[in-house]
Amino acid sequence: MNILYETRARVVGGRTGRATVEDGALALTLATPRALGGGDDSGTNPEQLFATSYAACFLSALRFVANRRRLALTDESAVIAAVGIGMREDGAGFGLQVELSVSLPGLEPGLAAKLVEEADQICPYSHLAREGAAIRVGIAD
Figure (spheres, helix red, strand yellow):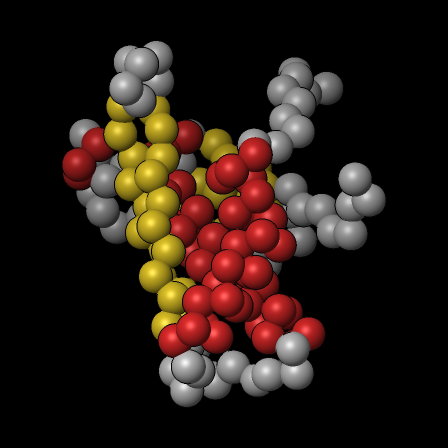
């Protein structure tokens, strides 16, 4: 794959730690939600970050496919990503469940559905959810 952009995030402390990105554009406190045994919901959790990222990426994919059709989406166009975490059925670990809800005001429902279908095919987060990703895990120097 020809990488067009790459970033790095550093987390210390896991779900109850701190997260930063290499260019300093993001620095936040992480907190485990009460539903997962945490005691303080004042920080951000990985599921919130994933939901935010997926929704933003999917809306960008929608704008891309609309632009290819010479259509303009309204500023009120929105994507809500609901991300849930729980134990996998095989009991071997945790899994995620994702549901996207798309609002495309001003578009005929059939056309909106076609745009959503096309965006789902080009959105890298949707591809990740369907096909997985090339993941390398190693020890830092």
